[in-house]
Length: 230
View 1 (cartoon, rainbow, N blue to C red):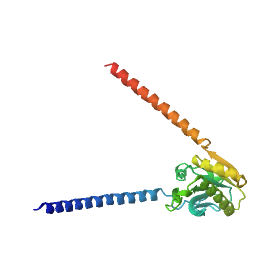
View 2 (view 1 turned 90 degrees about the horizontal axis):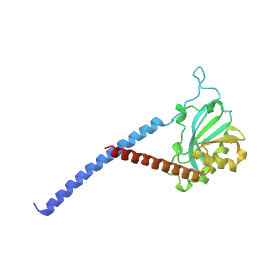
View 3 (view 1 turned 30 degrees about the horizontal axis):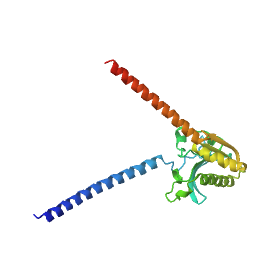
View 4 (view 1 turned 180 degrees about the vertical axis):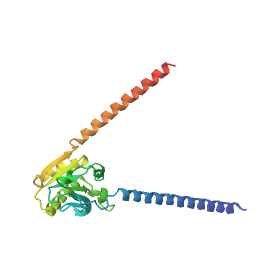
């Protein structure tokens, strides 16, 4: 058998093995994708559960819906829940990760007093879209979206003003939106309010560094004592 024929057979064998490996990798990736889709569907809110009366019938005047609204050119989703849709509107700004799903295990009770709008902001949760221009993911855009949605809610529910609540990262957007258009809000409510984030990050870094140094010192001291006792 000539050297050229041996080389060709070796190349063919390598190509076949590489092809098998690629098929296995693709099969694994497809399986992972299917699992991920299943998990997301399991966690997804899907169709919100309606409020019911003592007879199990939908509570008159209540609202429990999942809606999508075009806000400054981008379709964005939200969950609107209230036992009485005539109650004051409360727009909730999450802190970067939509946390509506937590209300199932940790009910807030807000729906008893407000028409709560759990908005999943541009690019997050059910408002995610790969076609959203990256250059629009800015603080100014988030503030503009908040004001736009505020006006949409005012018109839909026929209210001159609404309440605005921000949590963590959402407070950085909420407080500025309220500051720019205070006439649109009865009140702004900050939960885990951000104020001087740069200083906060520095303080957190210094704290963690001190804790790490202390832990390392204690570890060194313990090891040193162990060696001395031998």
